[in-house]
Structures are given as C-alpha cells and as structure tokens.
Image 1: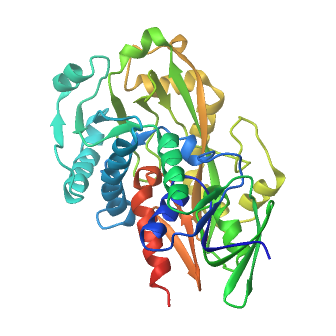
Image 2 (image 1 turned 90 degrees about the vertical axis):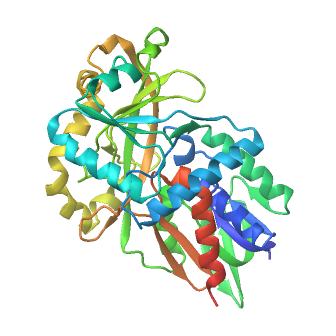
Length: 399
C-alpha cells in the first residue's frame, strides 16, 4: 500500500525541513516531507519579518532561549554555505520613557545570561548618532541580530534533503493516520504513505493534526494576523537598521517596529490581531471552522478579560492607518502617513492553554513513534535548525 519511508514529516516550513534534515544526519535517510501547498515555506516561514533573532527576549533556560541562540549560529552557517542572502545589522531596543528603563535593564540581564555578546547601552545622543530619526530616553544595542531570506533557507534545506535520499512531496495534505502492525499508514490528498515513524511540524494546523493522530493536546492554536507597511523608497533612509520598542512583558509580541528587508527597503509592523481564519492573510478573512475552533475553546474566554484592552488597540491599528502611524511615530516622530504603503501580512500560530494562558515557550507532544511540534512561533524560524535537532533527538530517544 503506497510508498514507504523511515520517517514522514508533516509540514515543509523551516521547522519541518530542518527536522527532516536532522533525522537524515542521524542515519534515517529515507525521509519524506509532506506539504499541503504547492511549494515550501508557504505560511509562517514565508510571511514573517525575515529577522535572525539574537535570543535576548527569552527567559534564560527556556527552550526559546537555548534553541534561538544555538539556532541563530546554525542558520547563519547554513545560509553562508548555500549562498542564501543574510546580513548581521544589529538592532536597537528603544525605551520611549523612563518607565521602560527597568524593562530594558531586564532585557539586558536576560541577554547576558543567554550568552549574547556585544550588548551595549545607549543614551539619547548615542541613539541619534546611530539612528538620527529615532527618539528615546535610552536603548540597548543588540549586535547579534540580522536579516535573512528565510524562504531561500527553506529551499536550500529541501535541496539537501533530496540530495541525501529524502523527498519533499508537495500537494500532499494530511488527512489521517492509522497504525498497521509496526508501521503507520498516512493518508494524504495525493495518496497513502507507509512510515515507521512520524513527526508533525504543521504550524497553524498543529493541534488538529495532533488530534487526528490520536493525541489530546491541552492547547488550541489561535491565529493572530500581523500586518506590515513598507516605507516608500524616498523615505527608506529614515531607518538605517532594525529598531524595536521595549516589548510589553504581558504579551508574546514585540510591538510595531522598523526592519530592513533583505531585498532592500524598510518595513514597519506588525500589529497582532486575532484572526478568524488560520491561513487568512487578508483583512476580513473568515472561516467558520476556524472561528468556531477559537470561540469553542474555554481558554479563549479566560484570556479575553486580560487582553481585551490590548486587543482592541491592535484591532484599531488594523483598520486605522492613522493609529498605526501614531504608534510608529513614538519611535520616529518625523514619520508621516504618506510615507507608508501597505506591505505583506503574516499569520502567527499561537498556542493557548485551557486556562487562558498564551504558551510562551516552544511546546511538543509525543506518542509512540510520533513527535508533534505544538507551539513554534517566533523565534522558530531563527531557531529552526536547533528545533529540528531537538525533535530528532526526542524521536530517536523513544524505545
């Protein structure tokens, strides 16, 4: 019945491809990556800000901290080896008033504990010297931050997988899994596949695929749409590098910021708006199944009172360009609405617990012969090669 392989990996974003390659490097060369779309990197990998994160934001000792720091180096090496465009620019995290300085202190402490090099505090004059259009009372210069062509990195991994005896099967949407003897039979839109083991790195569909495989995940994926604007070309010189605000520690989002793009130009954003379709990139996108999945999860209603005010502000910035511009003008006062044109949009897969807490670390679940990546939002693209090694080791550790 159908083709056979040692391991099937569901999802051809960076995490899935990195996992497949890590399994090959550990002796399981016959790996098949199953991807629903007609190309790799079609969702979170291809719709993010293209930033190689340093690891400064994450709680020391957490998986995000450890895998981001190690994964950053691996990503830089991969891109250098394959000629994928990347550049280390450094970034400023800017405190807009004195109340944010203690949070900047905490970020610096985390960065040093996570092993970052070259961190430096800047005063207002130092900020203006590095970024003349940016205003703040203080900033942290994070030198180990860069930009990259993440879809290019994904394509490089896909080539490596196929060169080493694996296969990336496009147009193969996962439908079901059943066990026959010591093998799994995976039903997809392009036919059946037999596999000795199975890994799911399915991003926006990760909780659903886990349930289809017999697991009972204690999280639900809630999608958040992030919208960007591009600076018009004649204003791209307003920002020289990467400029971020000090994030609100209550939420797993970094706030609207300015980012140099690897292909040229500067983008601003994103906001973080609750989406009613998991793969809905257009404002107003709606899918009844996805909306009911969110509204039917007890954690959503427990989260709502704590996040209502913040969420309404994000939604208003989605519908009002003026509100979006005002948020950016806190960093760059000379920015005007006519300096921005609509850019790209992404959808973030964020796991939400039953108690209403947003999962703030990478999260995984296992069953015999299976590993599922249940929560891998930012910095998962940066950390993807390290996540892949982590998943491969978990799968191979099963007896």
